[in-house]
Image (tube, one colour):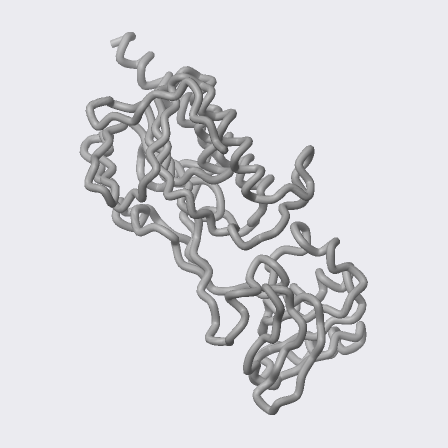
Length: 316
């Protein structure tokens, strides 16, 4: 049970130094940096993380193999121990920028004002219309070998991808498994040279479209193709298309990359002054470690910006 110790109750009358939208690893990391800098911070979070199906988190020092829920509970308890940090269990639906004063509105209709804004809103994976994939996502249909590859190493492994992404993914994953099946879900769109290189490894290329995934409680048992042939593998990698989980970045006018991530600089600042972004919404490297790093950087950079603004006012 999470104890919200020593935390202020969120107030619509308080002017916060920063409102952080999203309370997973990136958002909590940003909050900790700001809380330790004595900043008044409000975290707005729904409590429904995108990795809630994932059984274990890996590749994060001191917590390798912990469940996402365990990591979040520890992080939230530690963050809320700082007396200037408060938590609002709600969904932020919009934020308006008026001369660098941000007003963030929640689904409950409450409004919170802040000098700065941190978007730790994550992304939403778009599931293909293949029965079974959504139930296996994050369990046995996975996206990152650094997060999950060790658990499936040296076992037959499928890859759902096509084009340049498929080639690069297969070349990378060959280090984890020498029995790879590249499922292009239709005609191959790789170059002849790429196909030739993969077949020399060898990587087995299957163009037959997928019909469904047979699984037991999210654990993949068999891939069924639309000609009724099957492939028995314990894991399948997939790089799925995604959209921003929240429309707030777009509403504020934040620039996006061609891939759909929020554009940030080296200090996690977006194209809109006073708005920072961290975590999956602004990085293709989806991992706990990356989220924590980017959140910490966003918090430190935001605090520095506030300090510089205050000094300028006093020196005028």
